[in-house]
Length: 238
Image (tube, rainbow, N blue to C red):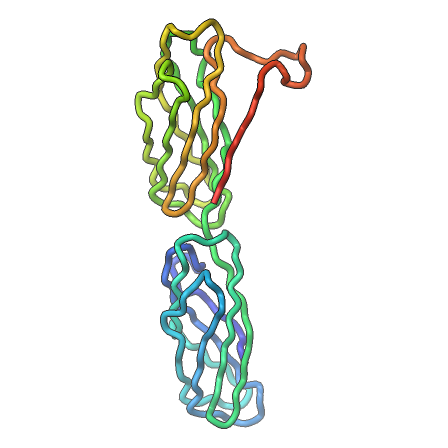
């Protein structure tokens, strides 16, 4: 019967896009020895592919345990939901008797959240400024090859650099980009500009539109409900 499993990987978990080995421990819960045991691993999950699904045990004494080290190979899909559960069936047979045991494994992936989006200082029409954007990886797996792109809704505000390579956003950490931009004198007084952001990291993304104020545009306590402007924040994560 199935006893336990461990992911044979540097961080001990099955992450998106990885091929990992499984150490599986079984126990002979009967009162007789068994020999020439064939072990098969199966799953109906679309999130994984079992690359190596068979192993063998020469013999097991009654009430003894046996660990199949790195006996099975599992390829995790590149795009999965963080925390997705994969159900496996482990089948053992000695040719005369067959035993099946279910067990479950958790998969891990990044999940992004916009933590901060604001100008570093007030920018007047025709002036230069900086936009601070912070992204938190609230998932349970590191995000690699991350890249942030920023686009303005108007040619009167242009970013010095639209693409920012972040590389790694570790699970539970926050990455911050400070993007330089310039504005034209065409802005009429105080203005609001829509800025689109897009973060990509492998198959995972976060995108949305935020508002950037040019000039001394601000809500005041007089409104009490932030109704002076049509504020909006649109975002999605995968």
